[in-house]
Amino acid sequence: MKPRPAKTQQRGFVVVVVLCMIIMLTVLLFGFNHKSRANLRAVDALQKSTQALNCARAGLNVAITVVKDSNDIRSEKRFSDLLSGEAVFPVGDGNCSIIVTEENGKLNLNLLKDKHGTLNRTRIDQLLRLIDLLNKDCGRQARIGYGLVPSVIDWTDSDEQVTCLPFVKHESLGAESGYYAGLDTPYRCKNKPFESIDEMLLVKGVTHEVFDRLRDYVTVYSDGKVNINYASRRVIESLSEKMDPALARMIVDRRKIKPFDSVAELRDVPGMTDSIYNAIRKTVTISPKDRYYRVISQGSVDHISCTIDTIFRRNMRTKCVDLVLYKEL
Image (tube, helix red, strand yellow):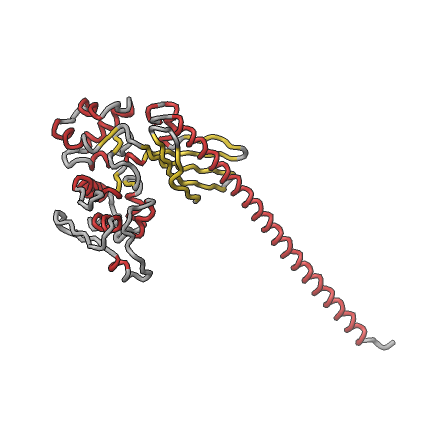
């Protein structure tokens, strides 16, 4: 019997075609399965992100209640976790952590000039000393230049005249619109007070690194006086050239035991002299007219988190709490 090569070849071709179709279907099914799993993971992540945001909002409501019901949260031990950053509590399937800081314990960058356009030498000197203190701690980080100070003044004042600080030997000139117009992405000098601390990143000399180093020590809120019960050790040191690190540490340790009830109580701190007290007594306070709080609330569900960064103002007379700034990170 003669062989039938044509039919054999035809059958072999059909087998190859069928195998190719099976492979293609397998690849398509694998791709569909992979895409479906990715979509499910995306939906799950979105759901958990929403839950994390709701956890953060819950923490924010807790902080608002605390701020509203307390004239001074530092004076009440039950709120100590809020100030230390250790306030963590469960919310549904997740949890929330809250950190509360008072902006009145920082240096106000909007008040380096008064409303009449006169330089406030006391506050300018405080900021210059703060820069010196931070530069001592900088290690390998780039130093913060003095030019930041006149540049901040030019950004917040109402004129287009470049500020010169004659009492600063180096980097004494600020910057107005002429400088900013020459940048790769030009813009005008604001010539108005800062509305949020993040605006500092638009000012000449303020890099992200500089901003990160200054952020916890400066503010754009408050009446200008530093709340001695909330100020950091570095801010306390910057209040006077006569203030040394040991005395600043003594003030911080003293208020941990009991917050100061009056500025005059500073006289009782070991190491405090009449000269130092008289140099700082008009620049500090223990009872601001309005209290400004920064509240950072972070909600977490599994490995997904959401952070809300806010500023609240508490009117000490009406006890009303107003939202000044709200950012979801």
